[in-house]
Image (cartoon, rainbow, N blue to C red; front, top):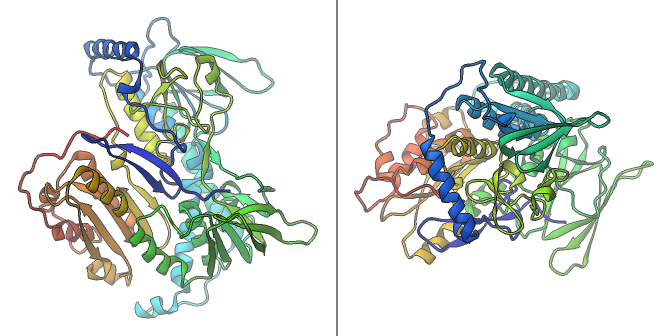
Length: 565
C-alpha cells in the first residue's frame, strides 16, 4: 500500500540541481523515472533531430482553419495528426491542431472527456459546490455574524448525485460538439499502434479499421491506483470513480491517502454528515503540500471537523462488507511492518493516486517499454524507445507520461506538441503550471515548496527569501467573513525571480494564476509590483504579497528561458 504521494524529478536551467519533489497525487511521475534530455539520446538520433528541426523551420507557415474546415492531409497519410484518447489533453490538442490547419482525428474507446469530465475534476466540483454551501449554512456563528437566520439545512442525496452526473454530461456534450463543429473526426474504438505512423481502432466484435497519420499523440490518461491487498467491490470498498456517483452517504468512511483526492472527499463527506478517518502511509497528513500551508490546512480542514487519522501506517488488507459485517481494514506500521490493529467502518475510499492507462496500445510494435506503466518521453513529449532513441512522429501527453498528472497540464502538453508538429519548437515550463485542491477553504500552489527552494538555493549558491500576507488583512475576505487564509511567496531577493507561491484561503484556486502566469512569462517581482488590482477584491492578497517582497535588484528583464521538465 502506498499513500498518494510520489516523486517528480525536475531539471532546472543552468544548473545540475535535481530534486525529488513530492506532490500529493497532483504532480506524479513514475518512481525512478526521469525525463531524458537531448544530450542523453544516441548521437545519431541527435543529428536526426537537428535535421528535422531545420526542415520544419523551412516549411513554417501561418495557417488558420475555418470553423468547419479540418484541413487537407499530407500526401500519403489519412491524417496530419491522430490522437489516441479524447480526454481534456486530447481535446485541447485537437482544437489547436485544427487551428493550425492540420487534418485531425481523435480515437476514443470510452466516452469523450476522459477521467476529468466523467470521473474526476468535473463531477467532483459539483459535489464540492454542494458541500461548500452545506458547510456555510450549517455554520451558525458564520451566519449570525452576517446577520442571517437560517433554518436547519438538509439535502437530497439523489438530487446531489444527479447534479454531478448532469454536469459531467453537459461538459461531455460541449467537448464533443466543439470538435464536431471544427471538423475533427471522432473515431470510436480502442486505438492500437501497429507501427510507425499507423494505428488500428475498433470495437470488440467488429472488424478493425487501419489508418495512417503523419504524427500521432498518445493521450490515454489514467485509472485509480489500487494497492495490493485491497479488494474493491464498488459498494463498500470504492475508488473515486464510485464515490462520485454518491450512491450512499456512509456514517463512517475511511479514506486511504490524504492527498488532494482524499482531502476533497473528506470535505464532501463531513459536510453531508459522515465521520472520516484518514489512513496515511507517511508520518504527516498532506505531505505533498508546502509544510507551512499543510499545517494551517490541517488546523482548519481536519482538526475542527469529524475527522481522525492514522499516520505512518499501511492499509495492508481491506475486506468489503458482506452479510451484515462491516468493512475490515488491517493496519501495518509503515516502518516496522508490525501489525497496528484493525478498523471497522461502513465504507473505505481508496485515494492512493492514479496509474497510467497504457496497456494494449501496441507499444511493443515500436520497441517502447513503459516504466511503471508510464510512457517515457523527453522534454518535448517525444516518445523514447527501449534503445533510448526517439520514436519518429510519436508523442505522449498527460497522465500516460507521468510528468504532471493534471488535466490542464495534459492540455498544455498537447498544445505544445501541436506547435512542434506545425513547425514551431516549443518546450512547456512545467514549473509554471498551477495545482489546486478545492476544499473549503481552497489550497493552491505553483512552483517549488519552501524545502525544495532551500535545497535549490544551497546547491546553486543564492539567497532565498519568503514573504507572506494574511487574508485577515483583505477587505473583501473580511466582508465575506472569510479571513482565515495565508499567501506565501518564495523568491530570490537578488534578482526578483519567483520560485513558488502557495495559497490557502477563499478562492485560492482562482488567485494562483497571477503567480503562475508571472512564472511562465519570466516576470520579476520588481515589475509585477506595479500591476494594479481592483479594490476591494481578493486579488489584492497577491498584490500585497508581491509588494511585501524585498528585492535588491533593479533589473527588469525576464528571468530566464522556460524550464524543460
